[in-house]
Image (cartoon, rainbow, N blue to C red; front, side, top):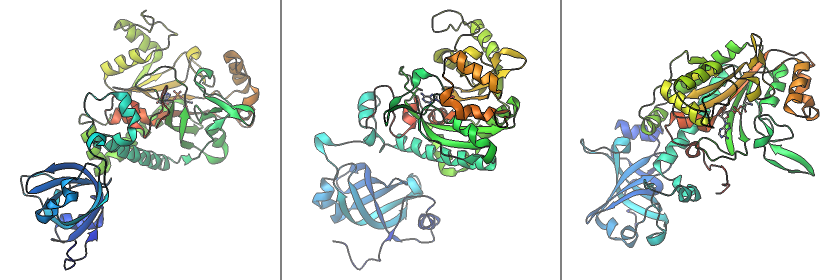
Length: 456
Ligand code: 4AD
C-alpha cells in the first residue's frame, strides 16, 4: 500500500534533457518525490536491499528498494524485463559511485504492471559473446532491448535528423518516390520482381531515375527511401532491404559533385557529434571514431588497380588485378584499411558501371563516377554524373540489352531541356557501421533483411 501522506509523485522520463530531470540534476528540487515507469534492466538482490536498474527507453535509473518493500512476494520473485511503476525520492549518489543521471531513486512504493517470464523462459538483455548469430536474428525483438542495439538505433535516428538538416542547409528538397516500379537501375541480377495486377513489377533498387525527373521544377532534391536488392551472397555489408539516402543536383560538374559529397558527409558527422547524447553514444560504441578531415583522398580507378598490383592484392580469381576488373569487396576493404582514410575512388570503366553514367570527355573508356570508401566498411556511397545526351543514352540501353520503352519518361529528360547533372546514393546502414564501429550492417537496422531472412 502506498503511504497516502507522502507528496504526490511527479512522473518523469529518464531523459537527461527533460525539464523535470534537469531540475532534479541541478539540485533545485531536492527530495522531490517522483514516479518512473519502465522495465527491470538489471537486478541485484541482496539480503536487505534490492538494487535494480530501471530503463524506460529514454535512459536508465538505479533504484534502491529496502525495508518492507523487499519482503513482498512481488519483490522476491522479481524478474528481468518486468514492467513496473516505482515511486520514491531522487537522491544524489555518494561521491565515489557512478550512476545514470548521477541519481538514484529510493523507492517508497512500487507496483508491478507486467511480469516477465522467468525460469527457462527468462531473458537477459546482455548478449553473450558466443551467442549463435541465427538465434540472435530470430530473437531480434528481444535483442533490441539490449544497450548496444538500442544505442545504434538511437544514433541511426540522430543520423537521419542530421542528413535532413544538412540537405535543408544545402537547399535540397525532400521527395518520396515510389517503391513499386517497372524499371531497373543497377542491373537485372539483383531485382526483386512481383506480380502487379497481372504485370511484372519490381521493388526499387534506387530512386535515382525519379529524382532526375524532379530537377526541372523542384531544383536539387533528395530522398530517404528503402531500396531492395536480391543479393545472392551473404556478406557483412549487403542487405536485401536497406535505407537509401539519395541526392540529385542540377547544372553541376563532376568536381562540384565530389565537393558536395565531402561537405554533406562532414556536416552530417559534425551535427551528430554536436548533440551531446549522440556524441556519448558514438563514443561508447566506437571509442576510436575520429571525424574525417577534408579534402578526402582522391584516387582514380586506374591508380587503384596499380596500387592493388603493387601490394599483391589479387582479384577474386586469385589473379593480379587488371584494368576492367571489378574491384571485389575483399580487395577494396584491404586497400581502404591500409590507406585508413576516406577515399573518393573515381573514373570507373564504362563496362563495370551502370548504363546511365556519363563518360569522361578526356578518356572515353571511363565514366564520371565515384565510390566513397571508408575504413572498416568499404563503399558507403556510389554516385556519378548522368548521361545528358539523348542519342548516347539510347546507345547505352542497347549496349546493356535494356529495352528503352519502359524508360520513356527517363529518356524524355534529354528531350526537353537537358542539363549536366549528377547525384549519389548513400547506404545508411553502411554509414552507421562505419561511424558506430559495427562489424556488419545487419546490426544497423531495426529488423535486417538479407539472403534467406525475412523474419521477424
Ligand atoms: O552504388 P549503388 O548501387 O548506386 C545506386 O544505386 C545509384 N543509383 C545511387 C544514385 O546515384 N542515386 O548503391 C549506392 C549505395 C552503396 O554505396 C551502398 O552504400 C548502398 O547503396 N548499397 C547497399 N547497402 C546495403 N545492402 C546492399 N545490398 C546495398 N547495395 C547498395
